[in-house]
Amino acid sequence: MDCDCSESWPFCAVVEVQAAENKIFSDVYGGDWYHEAVSDLHNEGLIEGYGDGTFRPDQIITKGEFIKLLMMTLGYPKEMPGHKPLGFGLC
Image (cartoon, rainbow, N blue to C red; front, side):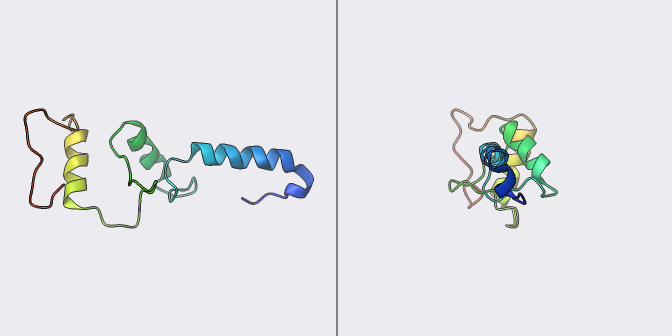
């Protein structure tokens, strides 16, 4: 963060804490062109990111990730009782 904390350190500390609390993924920053879209998709429950708290925006999306996003966007639930997950390395 570009802030001269020698003059206004309480303000800088508050801004840094708020930025950390509002961050959904550790690798998606407020200045990134896709930040708002990723935040909206996460808030809608359409994307979860990876277990390590990352979104990995530079990684190519897999077929399984694409199909899951498409199906959830169309309104299908995350899991469908009585149905087995797709195989073939898609999920």
